[in-house]
Image 1 (tube, rainbow, N blue to C red):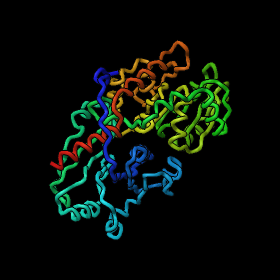
Image 2: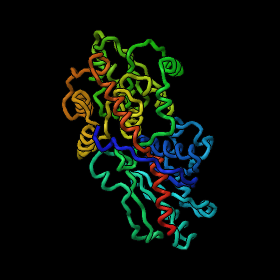
Image 3: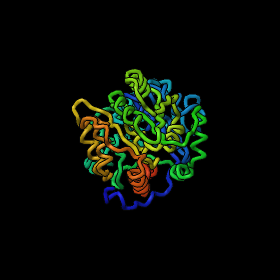
Length: 389
């Protein structure tokens, strides 16, 4: 892994507790709400109170069962439209921290209500949580101020907050005790987890599949079907299951030892255990990439594809940062359509492939850094100190 990621940064002292307003607009695929929910739940577990404002709450029904009913202490889920209603804003306790996630903007009425109540003198610590990237600009832009030039909060300041893979960034979401729980997950727990999904654990290699609808799933299934010992593929609900079902229906008759099971929608807790249980994880987007890193198992990441092709530079920056060996680079290149599918690139189940040891070393290196929530708490405490002077 990149050498500058090896320097340990001392965690900030405990801060708060504070009231947080986190805003999230669900653009696509529910990855944004997944990241924001993990962030909110982690803050609440550390004693803070969070209001999570969403314009689409349906994903929380399976990502965090009970969230919409208020059964997660410290987190309340609010409807985005309520942040513009005077009758709601009049009785709303002012928060010490505001967060705009992934480029969304706070409703003008919400900002105006707070600005007027404070006479335009004080402001909350206002952050803009950006997308995860290993590109060089992240370190340069992390924590930079962004003055508000117009509107009811004119004269206030926002700050960019970039998740990342180095101590010079905001870090990655990693709840306290996560790696200890991962380390305690043994074969017995794998057996119990698979049983909870109605699956038998036959002891062979497990592969999970979570992907976008442009992934070469048919080619993957064909290659997995030639593996020895036979592979059991666990397909997540949604786009991955649709692709896998189509591929199986179109496959020519012939010998294949591949066993395929289709999973229900999983909570974030169950999704983490799925990644821990599998010998190889195909993941997509931001949240599941981070969870695959903490799983410490071989993984292949499908980056969110963009029409202008800029996602390829982002993928290359990530692979360069993690010092990915040739095998890992080859898998990422063909899985993301950078090169044509070959079908002969070895999988990590082969004993001579050192993919597993590399993945575990990568996990251990990243674990030496301050996690995202700890870094945020330190940043907010610092900003409050500056504003009080």
